[in-house]
Length: 501
Image (cartoon, rainbow, N blue to C red; front, side, top):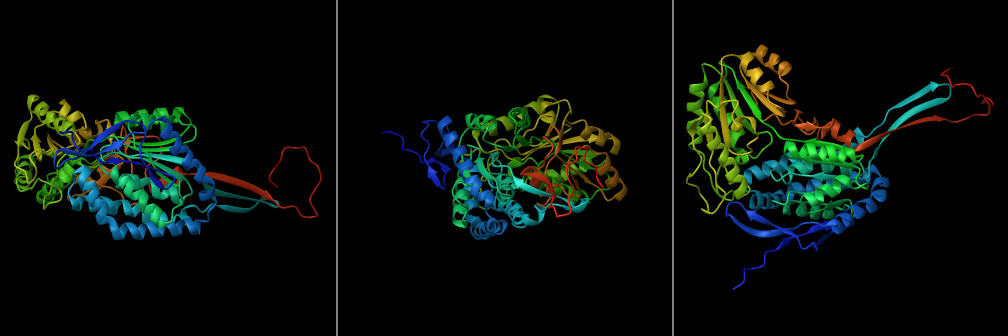
């Protein structure tokens, strides 16, 4: 008896689902069940070109549509998303594994950018200077780029694309979204919602695929800009390849986020924050806290408090009443578990071991429970590399200065936090630390949509961060006009160098 045929997640081109004809597919798993429930079509060169051609064909009319009409579509999309976000959360949980409440939280953070984009007319206003020279005015305008591409990761299949597409679309661009092949269905759901909101065909395209699709978008002369979020090695490749082909690129890379805990900190608040920030979404967050830098003598007490809270976490199917779900794939689960072995071999102490835990879910699921590692050597790969899973490390230091030195030595610079009741220490920390996003008694310092998201060092390639004012600048180009309207008294020919007078 042959195996049942699995449904195949399609592309979205010209306002409709388009089944892939490439003959290549990838499995899409339900991580809590440990089985493939569908497949996704992987684009070939012909499908890539069709998607790009559709986006470029739709651009002139969308660019020339009034801001008021564009905004009306954004408002309609916002209302539809708010009313039906529960549907999207279920899709995310089914394919990613995060619990439903976390999926809803992801959508809510993405919707902040949609709301920001509904007011984009204010941010697109140019400047005007009258009479800069006799009878001459100078003014500026911000205009869209054309077809732009978003390459998004598996860990936030709704929120990360929403960091980019609302602003890009509101500014008058057309968008090609290449979602992760691990959880591709959220992108199709969003495309259908855009259609329902009144977005013209071709303005929002979904191209399913793998590296072949990514490299095609990076090298195509008909794609003007690339927004990417993912691991640092891939972010570097995206940035270097895209810029080499004349594109604007914002490439957000990996992270190794630290939390510095001073002796005067409220250790109960620290323990709660560390568990929330370390194990939410099974640690598959670029802003997850993965290292606690404990200034002695608080480490022993902190390990005890965190361990006690970890043992009460419920791990299981995200559609049930659980705190943490599975990891996204079996391969990723095994890779993360391998870092626990590495840390132990390098001399770390396993304070809480998440391997082999009892879960509220199918035994075939991709399970790994919350894990706490103490006394982790900063030379261990378990410390130096991004784990991207539910593994929290403790590094002990003798002083504030030693803690700052540890954090600043890390090649990543995405997010960090300090926990203290000393305002002077917090102020000094935010000045001295070499990281792009900082929390003061806040474990996950993700800025709201009116500010911009992005790190320093190997956590960001390019000079533009996501959403906020930098997002508006990224998806637009400035045009400056120098204007003179002649009157009957204008002078005659003058071949001299023009001077302001």
